[in-house]
Amino acid sequence: MVKDNLKLTIPNPHQGDVSLGLLTRVLKRAKINKDDWEQL
Image (cartoon, rainbow, N blue to C red; front, side):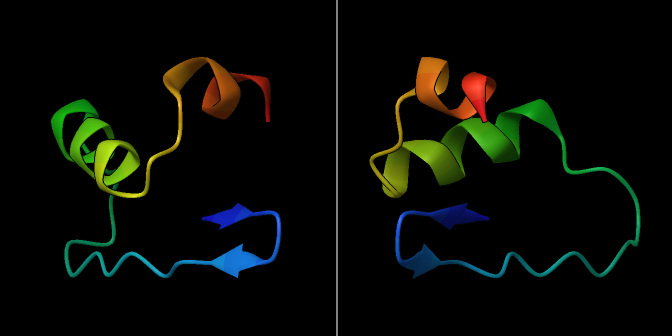
């Protein structure tokens, strides 16, 4: 994930898609608005 000059690596040991629940929690912790994320 990249936002401005912040780069965040999300480990995914399953090599598949990240679940919606996990993505929601990550965005919340990173203080990234869901609408902003969807526009990227």
